[in-house]
Length: 381
Image 1 (tube, one colour):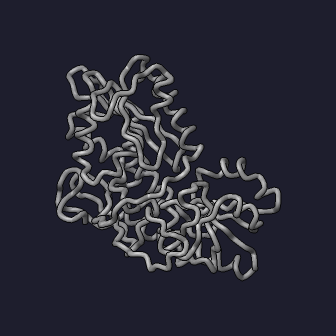
Image 2 (spheres, one colour):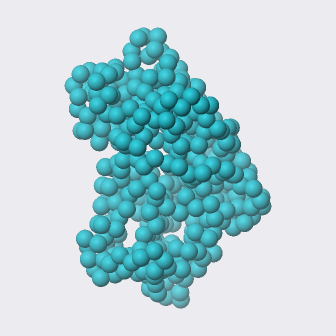
Image 3 (cartoon, helix red, strand yellow):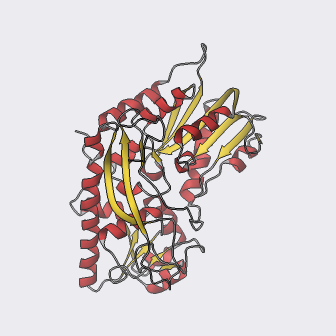
């Protein structure tokens, strides 16, 4: 439970649907020579019975995330999204645009300015108000949405991009739960939140980013405003299939968390027994919960490489696994590289051809769990 009420509707009734126990703050990477132990905090997902918003439980951590390198997949998706939104008539030259970005990067402003749109300052009204993975970082979800809605000029549009809860369920992405990420949106719950703010979703676009990302366009409720289109209706119907508001369905993530952690530990132990060195790539927040829950230390995974200089020279939270640079990764000539961020596969293959040229193999952790017989996808029933 978030403390006393839902972060969006302030309802009191709900269920803990995923409990990862005590976990280190996954955005604080200690110095490599810091012996620990690292402080740990409860990590739970709570599903509101009133509005259906899946959300982070109590979070006593203080965000201190070292800046990550922006993935090529994120920049390509931004360009693709802008083209598709513009083609649908929602963007025009000369329009004012304001952005709420993610602390992890991924701003669209340069691309929008290149299309002739003018960027307004923080708090100013705009014809297009964009939130790209930003709102999930706000503890007060109702307040965050109200703030964004208030900035939309008459006749303007609010664009909200989010990693879909339906995707998290479909792909068993339990380790998307992390401190500092306060909401995990279904289109169903977000539509209700928008209606409370006087807005209605009009259309949507879907992308492969993170296994399934949604961009929703919403406008103010007026007598002449169109109803949600077929794309929005299809999203909501698909989410009903996966039971995004059913606590028992969402609790399937707990089973996947247990089985996938066991699968990763078992595979690394087998590689160790075969004297085949495995290193990791992608010191991301999603890797923290997986490594900690799987009980992986540097004896099984000697290092995790990352392109971000801010993370190099540190260690993975809750473990003794150091974070190294890509040059060290290449020099190690590991038999396998366990990739914690599947979206990076094409990027790292192209950027680090030496890995495969010297016999190394990239292993996508999601695929590893799937082919290990545990299955990462949750059956919608």
